[in-house]
Image (cartoon, rainbow, N blue to C red; front, side):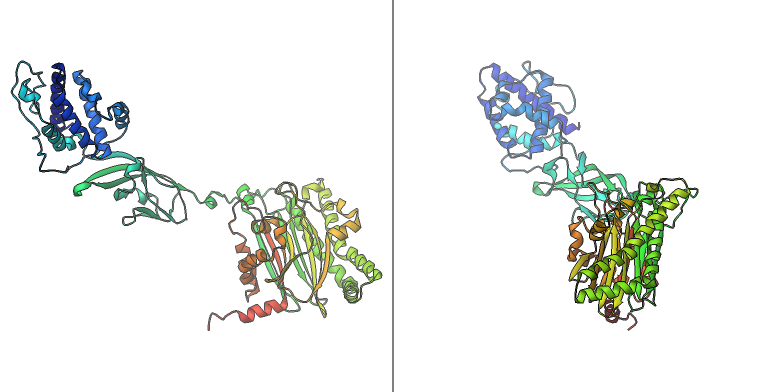
Length: 580
C-alpha cells in the first residue's frame, strides 16, 4: 500500500472517529450531511472504483472496531456487505487523473491537526494525521470531506489492472482464423485498446491485428498456447489504465494429421498395392478408365486395400467390360475375394460375348425393341443367364475354390460385385449389367438423367450390405428381375461404377443416387480429369482425387468409367489449348 493510500486511510479513519464522537453526543446532523455528500459523489464514480473504496472502508471499520450507525442510515447502505464481498474478488484499477472541480479543491496528501486529550491517537508515521475533539473538528464540512475523497480516491486504487483472464474461441490448424479476446470482466469488453499479444510466434501463422483488435491468420501448429496480453483502458478526462492478462489459445489439430499411414505386415498372404489406375481407348472413340485407392482407415490400421477393379475391351467385337468389387472389411481375405471376382467375372463375360453370345443378344434385343414378343423376351433372358449371370457365378465359384485351397471358409473372401458390358451398335449404345452389394452403377447423362442399373443392397445399419454368395442363384427369375439390367440408349455421358467409398460421401441416401443434380456436382469435379486429352494423365488424376477429404468417410475408394465417344469428342474439341 503506497503512502497516498496510507494518508487516505488515516483521513477516513479520523472521519469515522469524528462521526462516532458526534453520534455519542447525540448530534449526527453534520455526520449525515457528510455521508450524504460522499454517497451522492460515489454514485457518479466508475463502478470498480466505488467497490474498491468500499473494501478500504470496511478494512478501517475492522481496525478501529467502530461502525457508526450513520453508515447504515443512508440509501443503499443495506447492500454494502454484498458489494464489499463481490469487490474483494475483483481487481482494482488506478485513476491517475481524477476529474477536478473548482468548487471542491483537493485535500493535501497529508494534514497535521493538533492533538488534544479528547482525540484518539493515530499511529505515529509521517503520513499520520490526528483529529482533535473540538467543535471545529466536529464541524467538518461536507465540502471538505468530499474534496478529500475526490482528491485521494485514486491513491486507494492499484496502479494497473493485472492478472485479468481472457478467453478466445478455439482455432484449427490450416483454417482461417480471426477472433478478439474477451476479458473475464464483462464491463471491460469493447473498451480495451489492445497493445500487444505475446506468444503468437510459437503457434506460427498467426499475428495480432492492432487495428481490428484481433488474432488473425492460419495456425500452423496444434496444442494449447499461453499468451500474454497488454492493453489500455481509456477513462474520462483522457487518462487511461494499463491492463495485463493471460490467455490460453487452443489450436485443434487438422484431423488429417491424426491419421497414420502404416504398411501392412508383409508376412500375411495376398498382398496388394495401395493404389491402382489404368485407361483404355475403345474402338468407337470412347474410353475406359479406373482408379482405386486404399482408404485412410486401412492405412491407419496398416491393412491392405480391399477394393479391386478391372476394365477390358475387345476391338474386334466392340464389347467393353467394367467390373468393380469391395471386399468385406471384417473378412480376413476379402481383398483376395474382390480381386478374384473382378478378374474372373470380366474375363468370363468377355469370353462368352466374343464367342457368339454377344451377337446373339444384340440381335434379339434390337428386334425386341422394334417389335417385342414373348419369344424374344425368353430369348433375351436365356442369353443374360449365359452371359452376365454366368460370369458372376463363375466369379463366385473361383472364390470358393480359392478358399478351399487354403482350408478357409469362403465367407472369409466375401465381396460385392458390380459388372457391366457395353457395345456401340448401329441403333445406339447397348448395356447389360449385374449388381450385388452397395456402391453405385449408373448411366449418367449430363444435366439430363441419372439412371441406376439396379439397386444397392443397404442393410439396416451403416456399412451393412449383401455379398456375392450361392443363395443369389437359387431363384433365377428373381435374380434376373432384381439384379440384372439391360437397355439401349442413343447417347450418354458416362457409365459410372463406384464402391461405397466414393458414393457415400456424395450421396447420403439410396434415393439420392437417382438425383441427377448430385451427379452433376460430382461430374463437375471428375469430368475434367476423366476427359483429359492424355489417357494416362486422366487415370492418374483420378487416383489422386480419390484421396479427397470427407468427414466420416475413410474407406477404400474405387471408380470405373466408360465415357461415351460423342461426349468425349465434344469435350476435347471444346477444351482450350493452353499453348495458344
